[in-house]
Image (cartoon, rainbow, N blue to C red; front, side, top):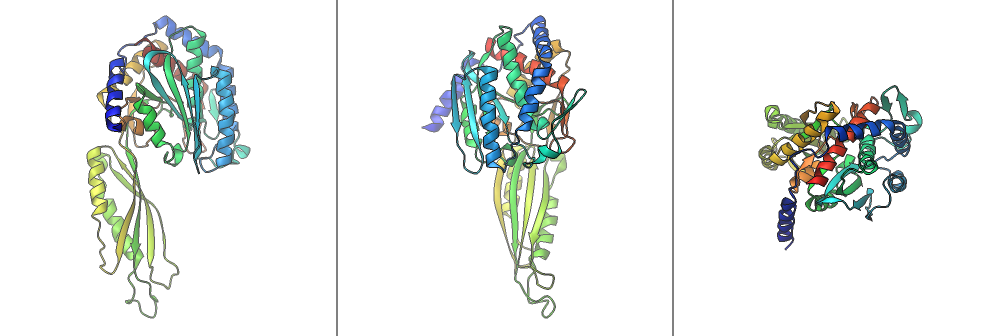
Length: 409
């Protein structure tokens, strides 16, 4: 029954015309949006500074809760009371906030933002929000707090200037940086009820992201036989030696030309230097650019066999995010965004990246996605993380243009 309902919902979204083909704002209107946002530059920066000050490390439930409480108040102040608001609690992860607002254009547009960051609680004390010229820095400003600020101000600009605004669903989750394990089901459900999704993850040097790799998170365990390494070096079967063979096998599975990488990022095991290792665990990060490669790696991991017959190997884990391939509808969304960028003086580019986002889940659910609409800057997950004020204004104006196109179609 659920598959039938999903099919009916997809047909209904098709009837809406999920991806507009032309920009709705005139050049003069687009320039007016940009000018209005420029006039509110200081308020935008102040919002980002306040948001950054509320730390939201993925592994700190109290900080996530405090940040989300602040966000709910800020969203009410900025956008007015939502048509409906739903707070979905999650154990051991940040809660999920969904705000639905009415508008024109049929089924809603899904606006995706995560509010968690990789930065440990307390980072703000040694690295506070800073502004130096056009550059804004601080933990999480680029990935991806500026993105949410831009999305909100895009909506505010349309409202203030009396321009068309679509029905939209704003979804904020607090576990994207750890794989969205507690929120992916909600994201998929909302995607299936939406015409398209705009993901306000950071840009790639200004380019939007129309292709992302799928990500697999696996552990490989080798189990051997412990023995005294000095008294009887042949009695044991080393799990470390076996792991060394398997790491080389994993490296051989890579196909960088096909976009497939396998990284053995962490290895831990053994007990003492004079004991033949009985157990070793390796943590793997696998990236693939196509479903064909995903199937190949899945089969290869399942087929791994020990080199030493006295050892055994176990593979655990799964694909954390599906592949985000550039479909025809993704290409249409990029073309729409490129049209909306033109009157702003932006020569918008698209790119493929190795990192994944919640947009991967959306596209796998059959909903077209435009990703990387967030900050212009660099340094995700690094102390060089920064966004630019001028980029925030430009990207908010671009998002407003894309949203207006959905409202008009």
